[in-house]
Length: 487
Image (cartoon, rainbow, N blue to C red; front, side, top):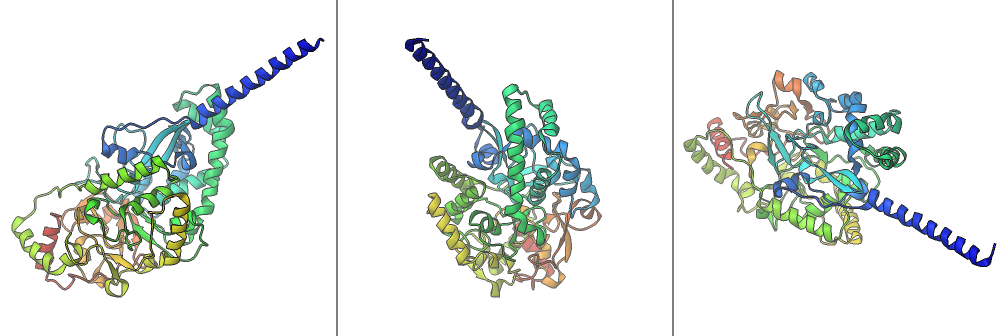
């Protein structure tokens, strides 16, 4: 063979190798990295379903996510119903976890679908901040965006995903037929899911247990709660596991613009709205950058102007007027928008409510978190250690039950009772509004059959303290509650 022919053959071979490499890189970009922007009809829909930016790190392939309840219905039944009454056993799919699902949507409110190579599922702010409620039994649920997601069993959902990843059925052989029933796949997709995405997803979910296993030896969160500051403490900063219990209710995020300059979070851990938004997004796998900043500031603007729905039943105006005077005398300093103590931290010695959440996040923990956010490029997302419980302006009170930071008091009527007269056991997660005592149905046979049994004797679940107004007459309490319906 002549030298020229050798060079020609070598050139052809190199060109072929280069072409294959280019095609391989292009296929990798197309299947793994190509990002498509999301579009929404309005800001509310963006808040409900818009990605926070954690898709590349924390995104679960949509096709896999969708088939898991079909492959593991026994695990759904177990982890969606632990602690609930017998009627809960009739629910299936992701709806069994108490998530708010709008008709016509591909996933419940609070779950985003974004294509980054392939469609990926991540959580949004709305997962914890959308209230589902019914005014009477048999009604179709209504959804109040920005309210506390008091029915969402986030811990049960996490436990389901972990248990599925440890199950021998989590294989391409078992999952792929289910995926093929719902999604059109070409040969490359079939290979991608079988050889890469299913094993990778299983491994990622399995490793999740190493990050959240600490929650298993503490009282269950139950619906509408999480361990708000142990999550970032143990996952983001990798602090050693301790024995603190920070179980807290999901708060409402209505009217946050009026709270600028005040302490935020239950224990006053944040001093700015940006710190709340940014650290929450970091916890979902988002990384700072141009898109992160745009998302954080958009979210701040949206919840600054967000308002709750009005109380849906008639209000006795004369009684409410009397209640307004009682509110001004007994409650306004802490709960009126212009009150002298609004947005400040009330010391534990005064407020007397369960202290466990405050003990969860010390200044040392805050310093660790601040070091991390500075390293990640978000120095303005600064937190501080908890000192007490923040006095919040009351807005949309009728949808904020259960009350107190840990959701340990079912109704406003019960909150105005002396602590030793408040219910020791009640049932959370029922979305039927209690219009009489203001809250949600929490006692009686129907609540027992459907709800999550909440025991106030468990550590972190204490229902004591906040004795303000407990010495009022029953007539004055009724008038005050009537006024609170209008807020």
